[in-house]
Length: 150
Image (cartoon, rainbow, N blue to C red; front, side):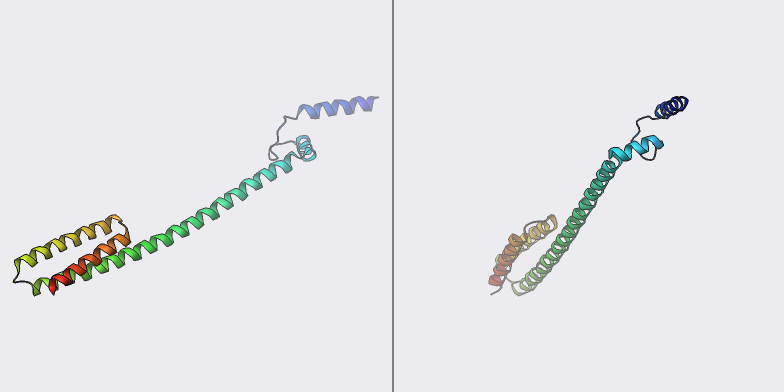
């Protein structure tokens, strides 16, 4: 009987030390045992693993998006460089044509108009206009200048 009373007293004292804590780093031995037996610690581990897996998946998705955006940036830079090269070619054609038609004020006035169009195209390239529309405009200017020279 004395032993039972002692065991009951020790059990009561031990339970009094339980705070209901579920964080394994803060639990006492009794709470740890309860957490292990109830599966609470396993649930917490599974929850943290799911969060970590979601973070890893989000990181992979972000990295893929960054690669896609970098690829698009490179493609855009290439398109802009190509358009600027075409603009330089048309500008050279205008300058060469200007020396050919120097005796015709009417043709020089038209050539000045084409040069103004070319400047507008160049501004649009810098502002990010549609490359297909800009190429079409450059082609039209080029054809008009060639027609003017002939």
